[in-house]
Length: 481
Ligand code: NHF
Image (cartoon, rainbow, N blue to C red; front, top):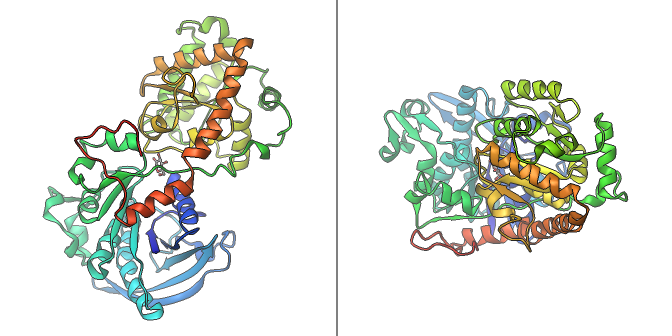
């Protein structure tokens, strides 16, 4: 099968989890199928640091019409780990900024929409073959998928990694002569809902977890029942492996002691959070509130153990949250540190491999990578009972024998604070050490067995072949697939 995937992010271009997901899926699919990635060049042609197998080479050029102007497009080909990567270049698609500012991004999307079917025409000419499927990742590439389906009769699979409810005006589409895409069914006033359009025009619609599909069933997915399902992402457990830690041979508590010392702390129970500091999705406001409640002894049990609790926040984002974190750090210097930076994968791995618990307080999370990375590294996740976090963590109270972490209701700082105190208490009891260590080991096994990219690839192939199970509105699945 010749699979083509269109995306705005693929490593080394990474804004969020989308890049990791598409890159890893491509690699796994390529073990059994031929895979091609289509992406705007985003300035990569002038970047010496890419980890492609060879410098991108010109594959073809052609011209596209946007409004009343004609733009030359060149498509470059390169390769990474057995996947053919096609970088689409034009004066607009070469802009290194991926999504900002909006006006530039919309023009990039328009160029890409027209260039992808243009490229397939060229491919037919050069190779006498065309993809068997086009897999569109997120709304940015939906229009390209729909034109490819219309002009080349290629099945169109649409994966929503996160619903954005993004809209574009009819006027904007008319101006760039894409009025053929305007579908009156998805007009909201003068605006046009791109994800709904994609849901209607695709052959199969997928999202990245069972819980997210259900959470958004009424608001979105039910409109497309009959062709909607979910495919869990995986994680790269070969990289997220405790064997690669700097002090891999030391027992975990020793590593923690060293890491805490490096951060200017005495030893204690270490909780940490990594990622974007935002309120809307990541719920960092709830996390800071939970921490403050514990420090102010507002949670039962916190008086006895608050002095032993250590809390590190790794990441950057909303100014308000960064300031809040700094305020708490000043107020509780023996317990809290915020590192407003992205440390890189290796340094982050050291935290996963030394901390006791990882906090993932998201308000919603289509899939989420952090809880899986944590489990791979033996760090026990405490996460919100939403989306992919709910699907991947087995809770201590729900599954006493199989548990891999703790789940708490979202947007509930009190519940989060209580769970943190409960887990800190467990950590400080000698007779619970074995139970916690088992949980750490089970976490890694659970991820390797159930959330690996080969398994995801296998299920996507079923989707491409129209052979995957579908969410039936009248059946409540006892067990996801
Ligand atoms: O893991 C990749 C990622 C998800 O939950 C994440 C999200 C965006 O919000 O599928 O996409």
